[in-house]
Length: 208
Image (cartoon, rainbow, N blue to C red; front, side, top):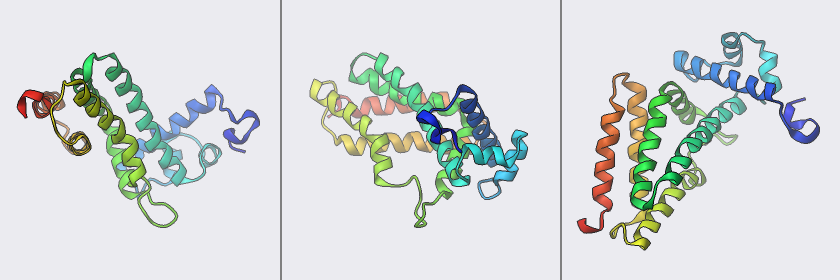
């Protein structure tokens, strides 16, 4: 019986720690061998546990890979959210959003590379990409669109399409993630500084 199906549906600290250990092992195996070769048996061997332990915590490989993606998104949100909330005004919030996203990617390059491999390969029951739907994009881009609209309403930002601009910013961030995964020497700090300057100028009212 999986922990969440037990009394109260709650996992213990030890169970959560074990899940994180398994996900970390999955990241390492994907990074070394690729998604296709990341079998549960191989992940279990890497983690020094039995395959049955993985099956206790996850409902197969697809569930494990899904949780790998979700865990990184949650960790990213926990880094970006407070950084944006601590900034004053829409402009500083936008710069905090960009900077904290890129800092998180830079600090988690191996994990981000594994996530990219999973997102590209993981399919649902109908063979469609599991994380490529409109709902997934809206959940990620929506808060940024709101931030840009708030800046326009407050007069800090000029006239532009918030939805288009938000997607351009996300594409720039995701592009940096892909480049950082491929290029060990990629200078994320320089990229972040340039990106902040670019979108600062693009959204300024006096640039319209």
